[in-house]
Image 1 (cartoon, rainbow, N blue to C red):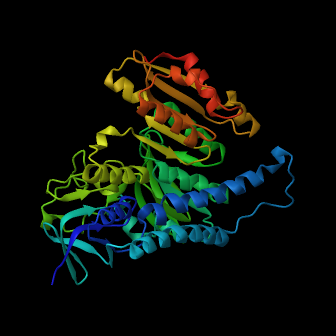
Image 2: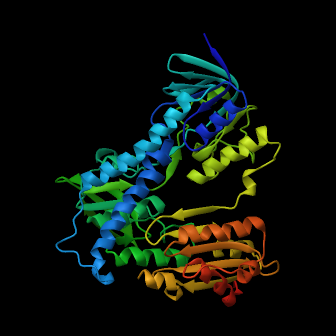
Image 3: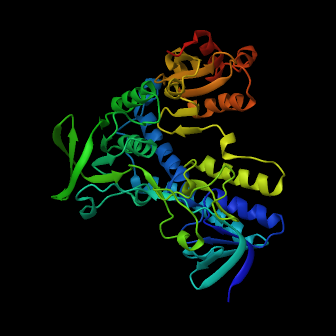
Length: 459
């Protein structure tokens, strides 16, 4: 017999649990289903574990540079990969268990574990349980997309999920892809002590970035000994004597990269292929992402899609913002839309990239009248004090309104500093407000006002 609820939430990523709690607080009877690990990608094999690993990798990197700061470390700096993994697992466990316990203990929420799939328009089966509700919220996330390279189905490969089980040091990690997942793992394992080769089919790393940012990132990684091949297609993969050989075509020539382990970080795909969306009549695009409007509604009344599966963001913060949009529209009489938000994200290599708004390439493509200015991190006192002067900061403003259009900050603490510029964009305030403000010394942000003194037209 079917169990009826006011709402069903499928998946426990960033938006699902928050929405379930909000629905329950509003007096709704809520069912939430999770088939694997509570907390989704961010908690289990994304943001939280990777940043824990990055912290360990940075500790090793700083220890090797200790003499630069007048600190003597006797003997060789070594890493204990089992201890590094154990630390990461302990950090993950707190968040993972916290999400599950919070849902199970909440009044008005019933937790179902198992594979949820639609069997009707607003009917969902979870194992032997049949659930019905007036509203269904899909938050099923995404996973690594494995490219159809000949031979890849016959070799062992790793992705961002299976990398979480690694408790050893690969002698040579070969990485397919040049986006944020590839680069973060690449630098991380190079700092742990692995040889690392990155194979990127695009002509630059992080293709969504301006060429100057991509080139600066490349130089940072190459300075640490990472081999980077761009405009390079992996055309064949095979096992060879316990190693993995990747054939690479670049510039009309074919070469071979042989490593101990292969990490595939060449893109993501939504977890919608086994969700039974056809039974509900929910439409997807050619890549499997659920089509939604600006308020996250699908084509079927009462069914919403949030987070990575809707193709409208792909980050933890965009998923949580999806929850905020849905909650505001349902409960707060506060019309909000996806189109209201300004694109922003971080690339957590070291030093990090903080991005907000438009790129210089976007401005040129749209033919906007804009101004751009840069400042090298070597001009920033805080960077000098820390002996971390790689990178630069770039801002783009509207030539007429003087409002910020975009910012790309690559350097020490850039992932935090960019937030202040993002808030200025939401406030639609002119950059002159920043110039008139008094900022704390010595910090990175105190130098932002001086960047605007060098504004030049975007040609």
